[in-house]
Length: 176
View 1 (cartoon, helix red, strand yellow):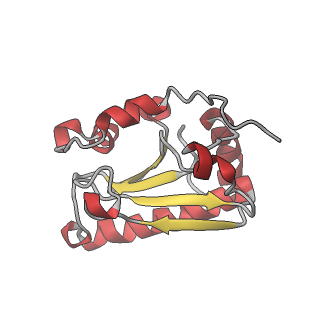
View 2 (cartoon, one colour):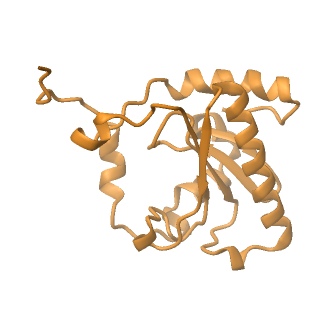
């Protein structure tokens, strides 16, 4: 019988854990920081940047390829968005799904938004859409028994796949 008492180290999670429970205004919001620093798009994992929205790799993914699509401005609710921003947000979500499908051959997707901490929003002041590729059998014993997820591909390797897929699909060039 297999042993389940071994440690799986994930020290990169500590950065996320330290931010739990903090409220962020625009000055402490990582999405606002990314929006204000286009010169650092590659370092920040920005995939695309449009006039009103950006698409970025989630640094703390549920699964490989987890992207976030967000307005450039610090806005908390859909009602805060003007029509141009709302339209671009939806287009970038569509294109992110297409890009991930092409690059990763995902079997399905979870796409959604969380409003308020009680609904799971880790950054409630800056709305964003999660685009999460899924594969048959990608849920296993690790999250159930170990509260741990296994991410099998680096962000850099996935970035290379996304760049090639964007070129094949005629989508904007991937920045990261």
